[in-house]
Image 1: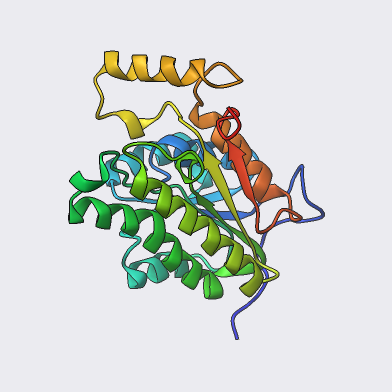
Image 2: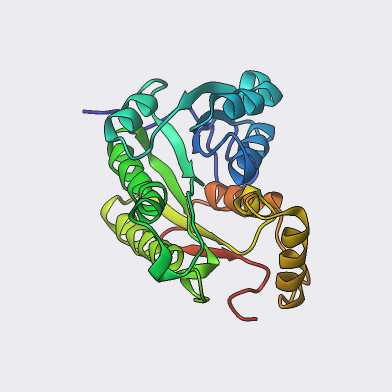
Length: 254
């Protein structure tokens, strides 16, 4: 039978909850994933970084020094790869995925490859991580997925993005029940200043962010640190479970 405890120092949730905790972060080479890794390491955690780019993973690892357990070039749609990566360092306290391969565009114009890419990164990836968590996540550990505002604020060009995000939130709620006492939660970001929008020109991106900011109660778009702060709060609080935390500047109500 697999062990059910890890080496993390617990002693209650909140401050100190991540000291010596082991956190596996898919998407840890850049953006929100990198910010989560940086903040978790600063709070005493050991982090394993996974993603598609060895160069990005190495760059993140270089800033974190001895806090890094390892870097894994990983295809999260490959169940065997996920299992092998998670098996190397014993039980993890937290498994996080920020991975997303999103295409915004008119529904009728989306190709099969674009749709499959979105399903692979945002749905099959979490499915495989959830399967692996049965064996490789501590009994009091947690899974954290990332969905997005498009699940609630539908609009032209976001049909599949929104559908996948909503499906992911439903999956997390079901897993919170089936995998108890392991916790499963979701962060739902709004528009964040990240590589998601790197396909736009600098001027177009600036104009888009200005337009979005004008419609938000907070008056600005998000930064990766906003999402990472919320993620750390969810990881540290052992009484948050089966929950979607909306970190969208008020986008759901605007």
